[in-house]
Structure formats: structure tokens, C-alpha cells
Length: 128
Image: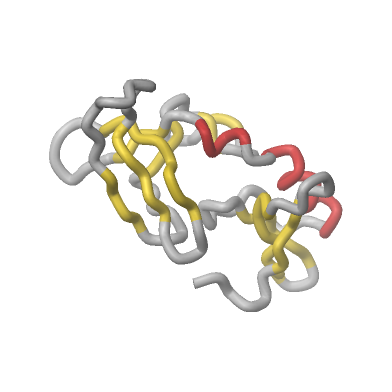
């Protein structure tokens, strides 16, 4: 559930929420739609800038979902809300490919990671 003191940040053009600003003392942390911190505690304009720079494009990429047993599976984000994150196995663009959906908690667990190892707003992931 989204904490009540988080402030949504919306794009100027279409008012779409691109993340939140979370208070941290007298500073702010930019938080992605997955509920992950994009910055350390910074000044308000810097947190807003991080969200603007990150945008929403990263949502359409291929992700990996680590499973308890076996290799990670390629997935795409289907739904991201402060209640849950839904992913489905990558269908590689085929309309008749079978897919498997996984409902994850929000904030998204570390088991969900970008396939290219780049964390939106943070660059290369320390775990790769």
C-alpha cells in the first residue's frame, strides 16, 4: 500500500504518474513505479528531475524473474500499481504463444530485475 506521505509526481504533458517523492527528513527520495528508490535523499528539484529523466519507457522492456528453482524467466510488465505488480512470460510478439502470469507484491521484489542489468535511474545494477 502506498504510504500517505508520498507525493505523486506527474509528467507535465499528460499528467501521468511517473513515480513518487518520499520524504526523508528535510529531503526527498525519488521512488519508481515499482516502489524502488531511484535516488538517495536529495533536494526536491533533484528528486523530480530523476523521475522526469527516468520516465515510463523502461516499463516496456524485457525483465527477468528469478525463480526459486531453475533459470530466470523472461517476463514483461503487465500491470504496476501500489497494490501489486503483474508480469507475464515474454511471448516474443506472438499472439498465439502461451504465457504464464505471476502476481508479485508491491514494492516489486528483487527477484524482478531488468534483463539488460540497467536499473531505471540508477544505471547498471550492482548485481548485474
